[in-house]
Length: 309
Image 1: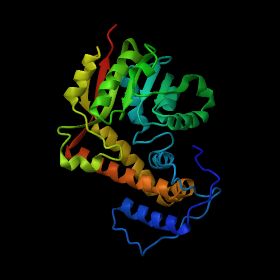
Image 2: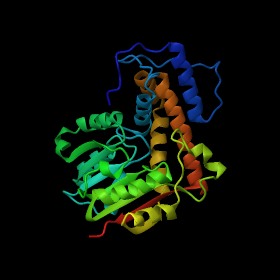
Image 3: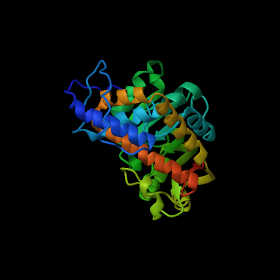
């Protein structure tokens, strides 16, 4: 994604301090301000300090951590598993929702040969997804991106064979709205899948570090199933797939750890200290979520459902 802009770079000292803090947080070590590392070697572009554009800095950080076209942990095995669970075959149409920059849509088009409509919450995300699609010109006819304001009426009616909601419900009221969105966007006989984070008790203080900048409220499985049924959908299956999410998280962290110098240099050169700060926050939140998943405080559940004919 082309977020490098021709703007003055921030003071080198600021990048040095951020780089040292990034390494310390990544390795789980105390940050020593006196042990400031040298700034990464300059690349083709000057670093940009997105002080006035934190949303764009967060996109830079997300892609640096999780890979091209991604803002949260995910991988090919997880994505293709969604396609199989939805019964998607060549020529079918998928509606995809959630914090993603197009990686899932591109994979569906390439591997499953399905057409994908990616729904974005705001113009910045829409433009970023289009940037991902630009690198797959031969698939352009199978990929499209649309704005989605959270209301069911902002999606086309009865156009999709499958609907995927991946970490798309940061609050219970959003989950309820998504249930009615699924009923609207699916064709009669179509299938849907919601994959998200659940907790036995949302007021559990031990999950507070897992909430992140969006102040996520963790879902209740019974309430989500009730919302789907209220929307006229049939719940077909519920299962714990926390291992799939942990595997995707581990894969990304191993990649970053293996090439940490390149990761740090690219992040700071591309997005400056605000992108690095966003990456630090993402690292800590997802580390806390991984720990909570292992401890059973959180679960990552996959709920499949069906729109009756």
